[in-house]
Each structure stands twice: as structure tokens, then as C-alpha cells.
Image (cartoon, rainbow, N blue to C red; front, side, top):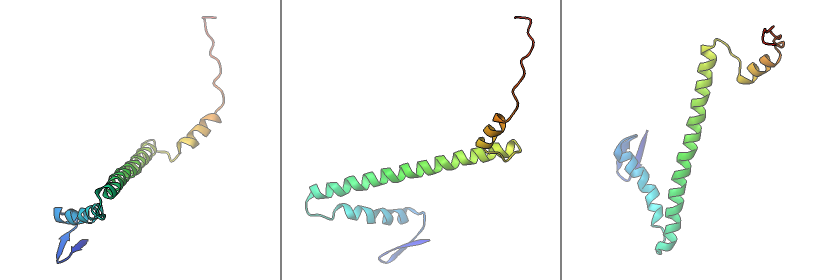
Length: 103
């Protein structure tokens, strides 16, 4: 994958690629002649970046938890979900009382 910038083509993942990528975003910050109006854009850029990071964190956290559950299912040699296991346990007969000398 390549990104074009005027005359230059930069390979994906290189410093130059990201420089050009961020340049497009930074260019939006200086759109207005008044810095006060540009501050709104600055705040939006920063908040957008923050939200993007948070969304990716949720995505990867969910993925990691799903992989853990899959591994647990694999290791236990069963394909039951936690809900199926709970249902199975609920259907088991009650454990009888054991005689005790303490009574």
C-alpha cells in the first residue's frame, strides 16, 4: 500500500508515510484566520484521536477475552459456552447429605 504526496510515493509504514498522513490532519487545524476558531478544530482532532484509541482498546480487549475463552474451551476439550456449562450444572441432581458424627 502506498500514499501519494504531490510527487513522492512513500511505502506504507515508513516514517514518511505517517508524516504525510498526519500532515493531512494537521492541515485542518489552520483552516480559519482566527486562532479561536482553529482551537475548536484542535480540540476535535485531539478528542477524535482519543476516541479512536479507546475504540481500538475495546476491540482488542474483546478479542483477547474471546481468544482466552476459546483457549479455555480447547484446553478443557469441550465446546461448551459458560452459559451451557451453567445450564448443565443446574440440571445435575442434588448432592445427598453425608452422615456426620458431629450431629
